[in-house]
Image (cartoon, rainbow, N blue to C red; front, side):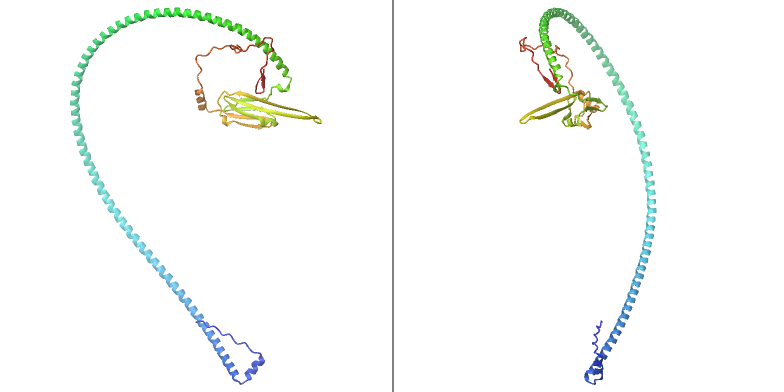
Length: 403
């Protein structure tokens, strides 16, 4: 039980304290009793604190003893458990050894039993096999003799049938030979007659066709001679016009210095393209050709005087193509610029793809149409006045202007 100490009264000033002590009044006595009571209370508090401290020490000692006793009991129980476990393990090992010995003895007994049974079964099987072999040999001998007798009868019957068929075949063959000889003689006679008539008809038709062909050729020669003369005159006029155009820069051929090289598994196309023209250049695969194409445009405007201007706008396209001997992977075409040099690469197709491509090519027709000169005139062409000056027909292929 905890005792709350009382607060001491505040001390009075010494003069008042002395006056109060010298005052024999009841207040002094009460004050003396109060002080005595405070002293007793303080002594009681000190005794209680000493007793509480003693009780606390005693309680701590008892707790320590109880903890020590509990640890000792736990250790004792552990030792007992270990000993019990060891006893159980020894008993289990003894039981296992006993069971193992009994199992080995039982296994040996069973092995002996099965070994004896197997030896007996093998002996009985060998006896049955010998009996079966003897019986099979007897049946085989019997069947063999029966088959020999049957085979002899069949051979005799086959020999008789063979002789009969041979006689019948000889008779039929003689008849067929005589009939075939007569038919062959008749066919040879008819073939000789037909061949002679065909030869005569062929000679007659060949003569007629030769005469018609000679007339057609004479007509073609006369018409071709006149047409060639016209073409020569027209070509001379065009060449004269073309030679005068060579001095004009607009008609000059664009040279890109393009080359195509075969580097084993791919083709490489190189060309010289100025940097200001590179964005207008394209490389593509068309059929079995690689094509380099592009265009250039130029516009100029000059102010000569106030209100007077002069302008020029030119547009020119060009292209150049190279044949590819081997099929290529068109989708894998790549190009790059190294300064003014264009480098385009395209890989070839694999060997299997090339074989498949070759297999898909149509076979060449066995019968070809007759070839005639390309400059022969067609039938009923537009005729013109011989005195009229030939008109030039311009056809532009890429940057090449043809007359």
